[in-house]
Length: 190
Image (cartoon, rainbow, N blue to C red; front, side, top):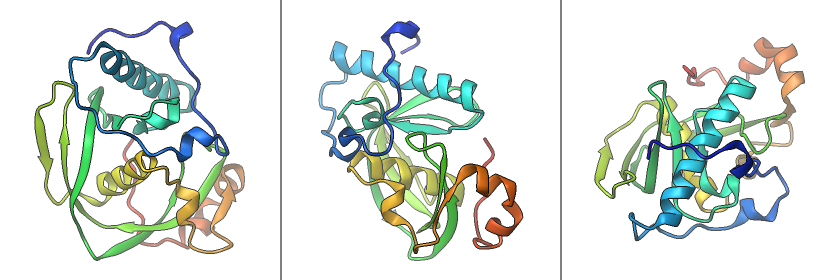
């Protein structure tokens, strides 16, 4: 999966309110299907383009580009890769709160609660199974967010209360104030 689509092949990231963001995704069953391969490449390319343009973005889920397959493109610093058919095998009961953002509403921050740790089963683009056992808080939070997308659930659906939605520019202007509302938030590294 090393070829990149050209820019004219891209679909923009769907934004909050688009019905495609509420679609539940289908499992990938044929890892040699040319459509799956093309969509996986496009998903990774869109992630890289978004990161270059906005300066943030560790992952993107397929429905955010209008693809209803259970796949996520991630980049944790070593380049993009695909997570296909992810399944949460275990989830800690311990939770933490954070300000979450999303490529589908980059103008908005959402205060919500997530599990501190997960164990995840997933397949790579070749169909090989992998396990991430008791992941750290930052990666666990990220994958909960992305897997929610695969089920048609958005971060705004998890908002803690009526004061849990803030415009990004307001949050950035008084970040210390807002970060005190979530003292146990994981620090993103990318």
